[in-house]
Amino acid sequence: AQSVTQLGSHVSVSEGALVLLRCNYSSSVPPYLFWYVQYPNQGLQLLLKYTSAATLVKGINGFEAEFKKSETSFHLTKPSAHMSDAAEYFCAVSPPNTGNQFYFGTGTSLTVIP
Amino acid sequence: KAGVTQTPRYLIKTRGQQVTLSCSPISGHRSVSWYQQTPGQGLQFLFEYFSETQRNKGNFPGRFSGRQFSNSRSEMNVSTLELGDSALYLCASRASASGYNEQFFGPGTRLTVL
Image 1 (cartoon, chains in turn brown, orange):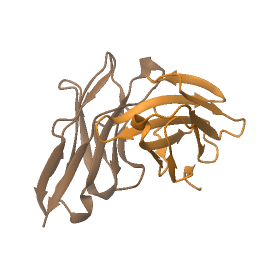
Image 2 (cartoon, rainbow over the protein chains, first blue to last red):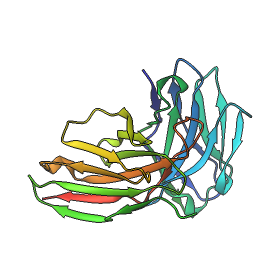
Image 3 (cartoon, rainbow over the protein chains, first blue to last red):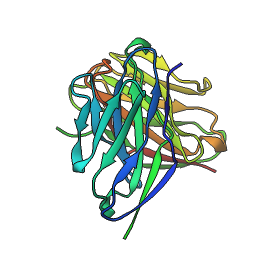
Image 4 (cartoon, rainbow over the protein chains, first blue to last red):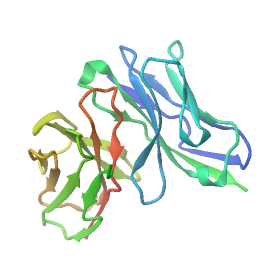
């Protein structure tokens, strides 16, 4: 079965501090991986995606994520948090052997403390 | 290009009624997926359509149905509404059904069932 686990439903960081949001997946084959962000009362916006090219992926708004096959992880990081980063973040996988259906994690709510 | 549009944005219905939600994908996108988002259950996959055919289906009762038209626009219908159907319904489109392609989300339709 395919699944995505996001550790920590709520994460708080101080403005200027490192942001680390965790995502682990289970898949029998290396999947495609995505991070999305959702601001209040809006749809989801793609931050970045991994499609088996470089393992370190850079996205929008200064975010990046590293694919680690040995750890089945795809954690999202940003060196310095801004107040505008406060939002809900979702990790998603699309395993090639499942008809490319998207599976989303339960989300992590990021709070940035001034 | 215009993004994914969903109509209506807000909807209030009473138990037992039925509702139809509409989604217009990004021009040229042939795949449309629907998700239900609630605070307790997170993002749950309803179904995906590609070229007017349902490709994948989530674990929802038969009261939830959908269709896709030849111009790729999609509708989802919920019959005999229940209080638990109150949610944000998100539509997402992608260029093809390949997992390589990210999904682009609309702003959602907020359904309230009284």
